[in-house]
Amino acid sequence: MLKPRIFSGVQPSGNLHIGNYLGAITQFVALQNNYDCIFCVVDLHAITVLQDPDSLRKRIIEVARLFLTAGIDPKKSIIFQQSDVPAHAELSWILNTVARMSDLKKMTQFKDKSGREEANVSAGLFAYPVLMAADILLYETEVVPVGDDQVQHVELTRDLAKRFNHQFKETLTIPKAKILKSGARIMGLDDPTKKMSKSAESEYSRIELLDEPSVAMKKIMRATTDSGSEVKYDYKNKPGISNLLTIHSLLSGKDIKTLEKEFVNKGYGDFKKAVANEVKLFLTKFQAKYNEIDDIDARKILDDGAKRARPIAKKTLKKVKEEIGLN
Ligand code: TRP
Image (cartoon, rainbow, N blue to C red; front, side, top):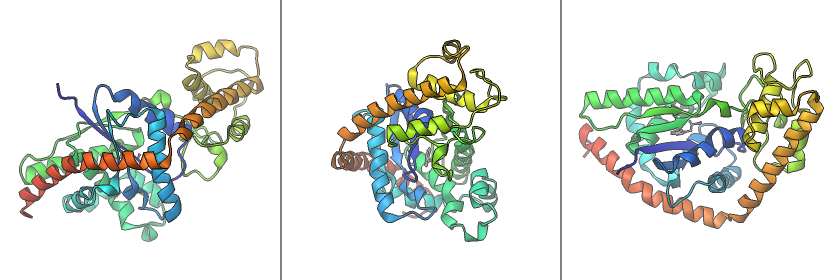
């Protein structure tokens, strides 16, 4: 039986944090058995904003090592670097001729990222969702696991594929978004009303996967809490404590109700110490595994992944070019 195809991407920009890990990467791991998975380090997306070349090179390998550390198995899934498969850039150009300015102007991520600086933002950032559509459509993807902030881009991908199929022949598979579990939505430590982010200015807003455990513990101790003193999940009134409860629960495997009981009559201080401890345990174990994978092995896995991805992508691109009249 053929398993349905999954495609998802992670940008090698900024340092990955526990929000990326718990909210996306660990969920990818669980999908490997029931789907035919392709996970991509989307470096061409990363350069839509200016990147330092040496850091970018380093981060591409880091993301691959993080995938492997988390348990993505290159025997089951394909892991590769986007720019190693030229079909992404090619199909993206072609889809730029299918997408309309008005489609792209609606994208909330573009509006957020460009802000009032629109004139100084790269054309690549504007066309970012089209490249994402190319990623997805090249592999006849059926399911795209993404955070809720990316659903609009998957909707656009569906629209572009339908428009193409309508203008030409039925060529492209229409994908569906699979929204990653929201229970795993980790918020910023300094501002628990905003999602934990790679690009938030303050380092104290996030726990990075490669943070020194002692530094990470300090970040938890400094995390914003709420008024009152009761350790209770109530996101509306206690976003800070609720976020810390989520983090503890995901790392320790204890459910939130159990944790609430454990901390009855104990203050925020004791609770934070317990969360800091869980974070330390997790990072120590995670980093020991991470350090066992070296850069050379990770590079080989990406190269091998690109070799497997190329023929799949080429086949779709060939069909598309034929339909349009390019060959
Ligand atoms: N835009 C996605 C993000 O920032 C990353 C991405 C690029 C992606 N290409 C993709 C996700 C294709 C899913 C499918 O999270």
